[in-house]
Length: 131
Image 1: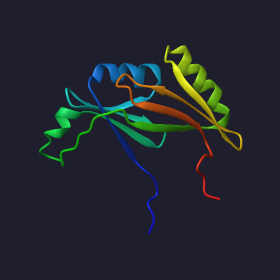
Image 2: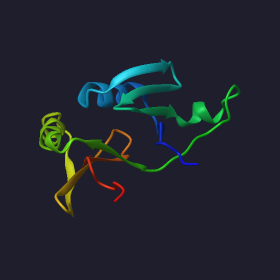
Image 3: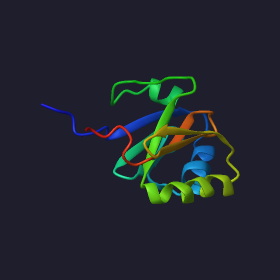
Image 4: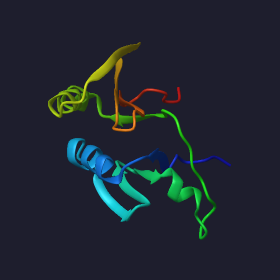
């Protein structure tokens, strides 16, 4: 038995409007759901990015409560040919790039932050592939 992939990833945020302006407005992710004062969901390729107001999801009664705090990290994989255009897109959106890293074997990634200071990464496709 094997897990196929991580379908959803959750970040805990403080403001829905800031997150929508960032993920939809600046990064161009498709918004696929929203509950006022609780959460907003985005499509990220074949995955879903869940952005919850921590205090609201902490009080959930119809699903198990969940919440968190702190600066979390996640990486978005892009085709190697799309790496440079994504880097340009992030910079053109006025988002500072904190670091670019050469992982060897021709793989690069770069790091930047969302409005809640979560550390995001754009990484070239092929990283962490099975040999």
